[in-house]
Length: 153
Image (tube, rainbow, N blue to C red):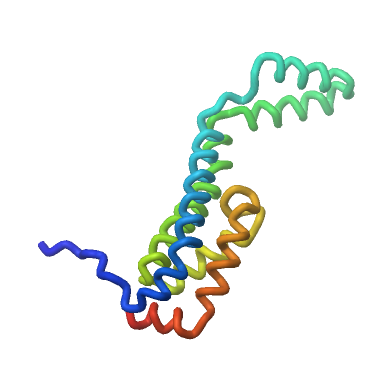
């Protein structure tokens, strides 16, 4: 079976203009993915932190304290940590794949999706640091010659 190889882009100028924002997007999304993975496996707090939380909860009435203790126990569970970090991992994967496709002028829609996700501070990579390469990529991606390079490549 013949392997699919990355061909050189049909418009090297467009590829060159998109290379830096695409690489920045990949790096930031990779860092965000690592941070999300760390959030999945890290402990739910040190003994001192848990003791401080328990001391703070002692000031509340017993019925409210019981509800809050139950919610905190749920949030400390490993399944909660895994499922709470999944959206970040999915967004990071989409940004990395879209930035890779952007760099190679392969999928205009996926490249635009990745750039838009980078611009959204609450879900983009590194909580707002992705705004700079995301806006940069959006400006370049919306130029007619760059759009044509995606269609032709």
